Structure formats: structure tokens, C-alpha cells
Length: 192
Length: 192
Image (cartoon, rainbow over the protein chains, first blue to last red):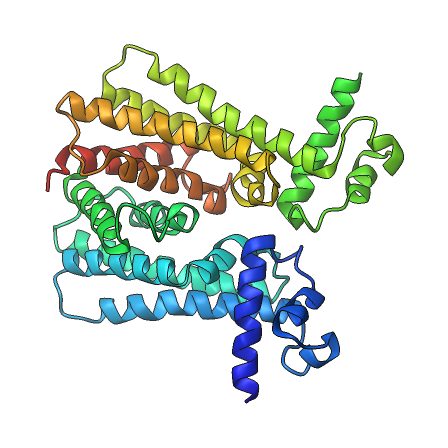
């Protein structure tokens, strides 16, 4: 029961943090959204900041876990790269509000909370760097610096939270494939 | 005199909005930072929101103006593309705090202010789409959809506000060139 109520609170907080921003959302706003007194809300959450931590932790963990599963497959490196882009796009568009909170609001976390999210974000970047390094080792990709390439690619994939529209011209998968084409062609021919 | 004091207020607000976020920054915080009484601050600014509008307007206008200058040159399209990436990187890293406020905080503007910034942001996206379209028309670039390609490239270029470090391994120009290589190779070979 507590679990279900927590899920309801988190869902309401995600909507409020996305629309108004973390700082502009009060604990009272969240309580109102789920029909609880402010005092009762504290049975389920320790603080507004802990709620932001839990939301952003769930979001970044989802990105990491999905990419780890793809990396562990036996697919050729180009195919793992493409699947990685597809999975990122699927996840970010399916959980667009939660992703927005992660990508725009996590900076408001104080230490040591901020460090937890930063470490997981670094882990996600390292996984992308690893795929690119594997491609370089296999003689398929040519880049000057794998980490800069990973940051470049991840930037495009993350920025999607700003412009993706459910009712847009392309599905998330179609956009992922256009991005993957551009990046794979760039990585493959990128010998300078 | 009023102009100089306004500049000082804007600079203080940029620092505060970057560090704490727009909503977490009070008018009192800004007044304290420039050594004014809150009442006196209102001689220079109409409201905190108007200040956010002016800051974000200056930021996005700078991006637009610089890219327009490059587009108007007679350079080959590939070179204009590379110069566009370089100029974006120079500007975003030189004005990193102001860019952070633009890219992370502008959503807090109410209407019609938000629309002003959105229109200029669309104009910047349209300029990038135009360069790609010119490359396609010249038979140099191959893309499925120029606007998606422009959003992909712009996402990478904007995300830099999150990870660029002045003391990092590469200069802004070196990063710009690595990004431009990746994208130009991708655009040139991107026939699917």
C-alpha cells in the first residue's frame, strides 16, 4: 500500500517538477496533487530533495541498465551502437517527463545526492565510450577521442527531451535511426 | 550610469541563476550581490522575470547573429558548417553561465516572454536547417530530413554547457573540430 502511494506521489512530483521546475514546486503542491495533508505526505517521503533524488536515480539507472544489456550481447559493434541509440530514444520518449526532471533539474540536488547522480551519469558516458572504443579496436570506427565522440552523441540523444513531440512527423524509432545513420557514417568515415 | 549598473545586475543574476536556478534566486539575493536595497534594484529592472527575459534574449540573439554572419559569406557549404560549429562552441564556452541560463532556465518564462525566446530559438534551428539544405542542394550532403539532422547537431552543440571545462584536455576550438569532423563525415556519407 505504501509502495502504491509512493508511486502516486512520485508521479505527481514528476509532473510538477517538469512543468514548474523543482524549486518552484512546494511540498504543499505535491500534497495537494495527491490529496494528502502535508504532514501525511511526510509518512511517504523524507523531504522534497529526497524525492528528487529518487526520481533522478530511477531515471538514470534505467538508461544505464538498458545500455548494459545491449553491450553484453554478441551483436557486431555497429549494431550495438544502433540498438543503444534506439533504446535511449525509446526510454527518453516513453518517460519524457521523468527524463526532463533528470536532465534539467538534477543540478539542484545538494551533496552527496548530486554525486550519486553524477556517478551514474559518468557510468552511462563510460558505457558509450566503451562501445566506441570497441569499434575503434575492431577497425570499424575512426575517432580522435572516444570520450569527446561519446559526449557529442549523448548530447544529441539527451537534447531530444527538449523537442520530441508525440504527435510529430516521426516515431521515436525513426528519429533514432536517422541519428544512428548520421553518427555511424560519421564514425566510420571519421579518419582525419 | 544606469547602463553600467544594469550590466552589473545582469552579471550577478546570471551567476545566481546558474548556481541556484532562477526560481531559487530571490530579488533580494540579486540586490545583495550588487549592494543595493531591494527597492533601489527596481529602478533598474521591472521584475525578476524581465531580467531572465533580457538575459536569455541576449544569449540567443548572440547565437543567431553570429551564425547569420557565417551563412552570408561566400565560403563553400562544408566550410560554413564547420565555422558555424566553431562559432557556436566559442560563444557557448565564452559565455558559459549565460548559455546555461538560456538552455536550462528559459522554460520558466511565462507567456508572451517564452514565445519571444522560442521564436529566436526556432530561427537559430532554421539557420542550421538552411545550411544543411544548401549542402543537400549542392550534392555534398545526404540526409533523410534536414530538420532532424539540424536538431541532432544542435543537441550536441548545446549539451556542451553541461560538460565543458575551461581546464579540460581540449580547447573549445579543438572540440568544435572533432564535432565538425564527425558530423561532416556523417552528412557526406549519410546516403541510406
